[in-house]
Image (cartoon, rainbow, N blue to C red; front, side, top):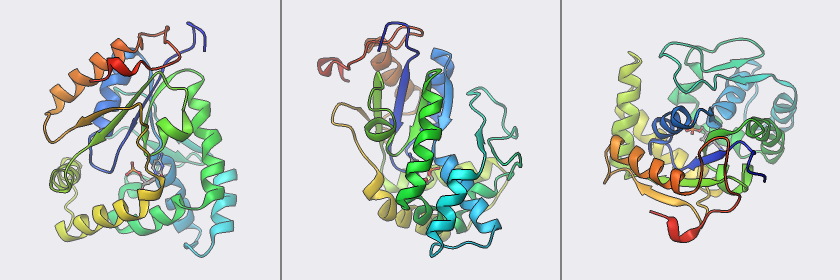
Length: 240
Ligand code: DC
């Protein structure tokens, strides 16, 4: 990586740990694209459902992953209600977040050929620099990232945050469905969730949003993530 390589910052962690909030804040701060990698898996799951495909149709879903045109809105300052994701030009308008798809979502994410197909899609965002949020961004998608963050939070806080997100969107969700969604997805996603040993770990139970952003921004600044310059290797002693 040269000094002119646009920075890549990765944020991994379980559902509801605060990745999107932090990702948008850091992308805005450094003038980078915000790449929510989970939306690619969500979009593919919606596309599979619309084609009548289920978990048993792994090969057909993998083919969909290779051929569907999945677009992400990477503007970190986009207004609520603006499109997030397009599948072959179509906006699913929140269907991608329906908690009743949770099981298929994890099953789709577990198909190796799907992960291979989406790897290239995700890496393409890195060329212009980005803040990428997901499960394996630091270890698998962007091992070269200049700053890697891992967020953790208790189950109770994560449930509360997910419920608030739905409330903000004007959708009411059965709390037991939400609870099952988080527990089951944690279990199913665990084999594909990685914490880079070099990552800056932030517990978002103990830190409110502004403190989480302050700690992460300080860490990224320390790592040299000031566009367009970004050093190639994290320095362990500078971790929070
Ligand atoms: O971050 P999220 O909850 O929107 O992610 C949706 C699903 O996508 C999640 O169940 C696991 C999967 N995922 C993944 O396997 N790898 C990623 N980098 C991001 C998400």
